[in-house]
Length: 182
Image 1 (spheres, rainbow, N blue to C red):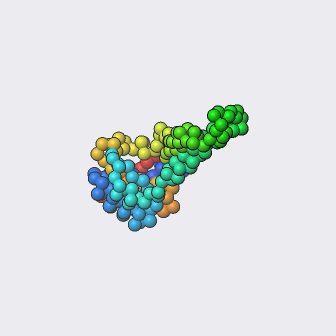
Image 2 (image 1 turned 60 degrees about the vertical axis):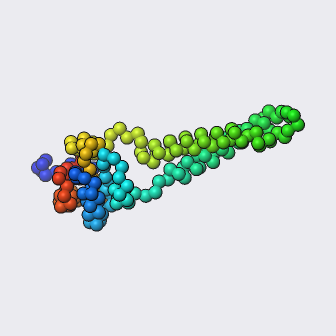
Image 3 (image 1 turned 120 degrees about the vertical axis):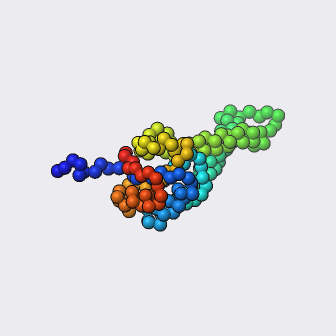
């Protein structure tokens, strides 16, 4: 068998565009062709691109809320356990469960729990740390942080065909199309 006839597996096909209007037009064209596993790379965040790709709502606010509730309850019940169960002291005739005295620490534990949950949630949901991504193998991707806009059709898409993806991106006015090797 001819070794040149066997094609290596790829991560996807990526096209380069000169401005964000071309990128948005390309995203719409790619989605119209039925591709669903696509990603865009640009030098700065553009809301229209995120809307065109159709990214879902973030789960981070729910994670922060749950972290804050767990932190607040943990802070309150830690104080309750220390003051009423483990080491009860009657100071000035106040009850062991003197909840007004617990409010500052409970508030601070709520903030701490929410912040820790936010940091952990962002890292986990974004798949960080990710020191390597296959798009870094494309030579022209070095311009992604300066002045170019990229659209990648991933090979995991059920409709993916390397040749058709190349032709589609070229027809959508990509000035360069490259295979993204894993």
